[in-house]
Image (cartoon, rainbow, N blue to C red; front, side, top):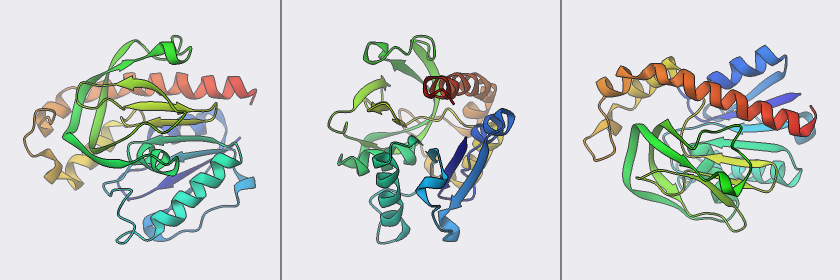
Length: 231
């Protein structure tokens, strides 16, 4: 299987996903948009993963590659590739599907519970009914038409959705490693300004070991996609 991921900034890479893919023996390639790298031919990839980043999907004037990225995502969806987005990646998927992306009522940064609406899909064997997820976002999105919402938090109703059988969007982070969180704290300290759903760097790092629990859930989810596709 051939996995390709889109990276928007140096400090938000594929993290645990790369480890899982390498352990599984899958091919992995990357387009580093901040280095103006080209997109691959769509017929050369099987899965597309879209990582996070501090920019907004609406910043097309500042980040001119966003338009090309949205077009590439749309073409991958049309080609029935497995498309999975995290944080900014989820917002890009929502935007491509015609939904509005805008500032949330508050920032959500740190470890906060997410509830899974398993009635929308048989996810009981993959996700717990509630988990302490990691968040780092200030924007949210409307639910795209025909998408199925399957996760919410107190601060942000639209946390994750499924579109068809091959598109998944996660506002929260399942892929993060301890090093990923350390980089976010180092490169985005201004995001840690006080708020009702903003934890301090100290509070975030105090339970950083919970990243391993999220990685285990992500591994189970990714493997369920592999199994369902017979790959």
